[in-house]
Length: 193
Image (cartoon, rainbow, N blue to C red; front, top):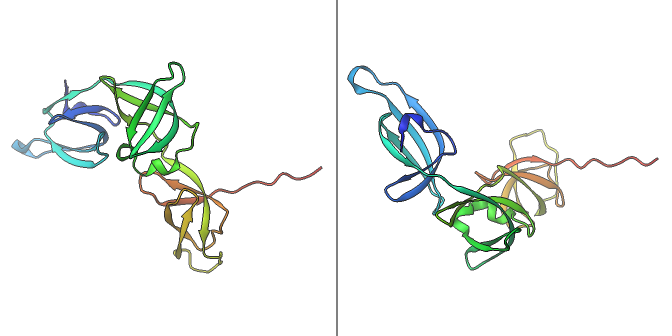
């Protein structure tokens, strides 16, 4: 058991028979007899939904110990992504809802840490940023307006907004939490001898 005032980012707790990962913790001091409050942002590990909740600092929560194994991504089918442990060749299916937007950026052979609770996969540790090539978009234009955006379709089928200067075939970085464009990846050309 852990009390709410001891919660830290990335901890895993059980609330009302659901398993959550702590994303954010903020404490607010109270006045006089009011006492303080903890504002906690949680992610449900089975559905992927975000839940913000207020707790009293002395509230008790059940903290959970997880097992973590690095597994290789194989393929996606029927609403699940299949991963394999390279040491035992054991395969597990992780629901697409658990991965969210990151499922579009998975490539066969990619190795990712997967969290297990009581032998069941409950979460995949994903990078915050992924790169993808722009498959199609309007021709690039260079305008004085920095805040102008256009629609672009990435090779993985995802549509995002990109700045006007991005051209088809270029590689962009995408925030996996929000699905928003971050920056264009600059490819350095090697100079000949």
